Amino acid sequence: MTAVRQDAWSTEDDLILAEVTLRHIREGSTQLAAFEEVGEKIGRTSAACGFRWNSCVRKKYESAISNAKAQRQKRSYLRKQPALLGPQVAALSTLDTEENLYKADGISEDSLSIDAVIRFLRQWKGTVQENGRQLKMLEKELREKEDELHELRCENDRLSKEVNEVQTDYRVVNDDYKALIQIMDRARRLAFLTEEEEELKTRFKMDANGNLERIE
Image 1 (spheres, one colour):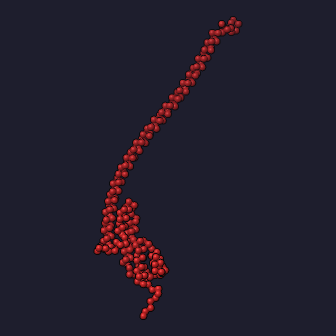
Image 2 (cartoon, rainbow, N blue to C red; image 1 turned 90 degrees about the horizontal axis):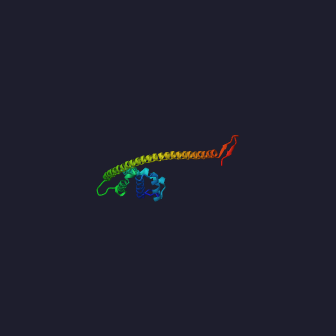
């Protein structure tokens, strides 16, 4: 009777190791994270899980590893698409669930992926066309706003010019008014002096001795 080591790997342990590692590959995680998760589930160290994977289990799942890497690349590509394609990307990502990665209703994984990509591209085309129409409308509105802005700037320049002209006219009128007030003031002073001189001439006269005598 052959003795079984207490720490020997069972078929179930190998299956858990394969499933978890493949999932981490598909999701773009690291194998080290997968080994740590497996170690917690089956009570082994991550180093032991890594050694078991590389030495025994990996060889049995070469095809599954290639598929997982392809799915990881596709997911990475979809995440890098522009934000405007978000709804389409989300719809395609929904098709890329773990259940749809296996054969269903006689449709292979490759054919399902091609159908999903075709639907995605059609939706993408419709979205791009719609965005193109919206872009043209926005460009038209932008041109209209630019024309309105140009008209408003011209109107502002015209009003500013008129204000400057009014201010100039006001300064001229104000200067003329001040000059007129000064002229009128000097005229009043001259008139007052003339009246005083006339009064002096009529009220006084000089006698034969050179003295002024007042005339009553």
